[in-house]
Length: 275
Image 1 (tube, rainbow, N blue to C red):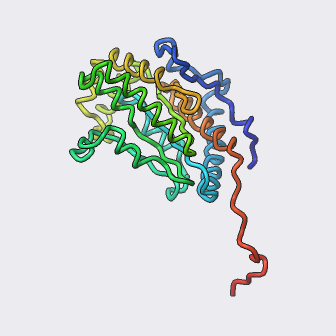
Image 2 (cartoon, rainbow, N blue to C red):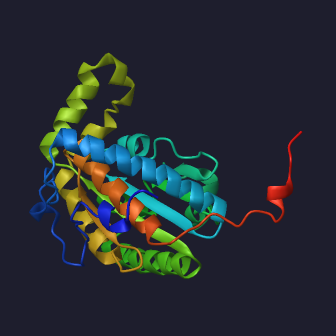
Image 3 (cartoon, rainbow, N blue to C red):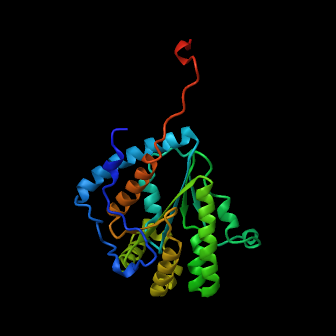
């Protein structure tokens, strides 16, 4: 590897500590990164190349498991992160799991049943595009569960993630934090650009009307479930280039800290001649 792990810790992370206030975090923050956009793009390209190589070693070594959780309000940038940060990785070892409205079969089971089936196996990296946290977010805003049930689920989620970690899964959770003003611009862009019309869902305007309530339940869920073994990173996401740099640098640093290596080759390879 060309870079040392210290070299990729270029973003000052914002990790929820149980008392985090989303309103106190600027969605346009650069997290103390001093570079401009052009410099950031160049650094991000280097980090992405490192991620591609590290993911290949992760897959080959077949030892570690990495779960990346992405949560955000509508237009928060989850799809953008997946396209940019994970560009070039080996699709054999990287999978994206999206959790939409539960199917009738899923509703017959507990809310974590469908989630457990999608967690990574050895050598895999799995990205949750939305996740089990939907069951303590939209369910609360819409009144499908009350605060007492939500607190019970916070405990269950903490126990679930602790079990995954104890069984060898590394969990990194990112909340992509955008402002209400930025969401307005992104929604308007989906209306103005015919190529993006398909992305516009009138239901997003209903959720936007409940912005303050969503911010409250996100804040409570993040504070209740951010732990040393499964921390929540609050990612200022109004600026895509900061968002991508943040996410990529955290993942690269995490993988580097594993000190992974390719498996030893089969003995006698030096004697083999391909004819």
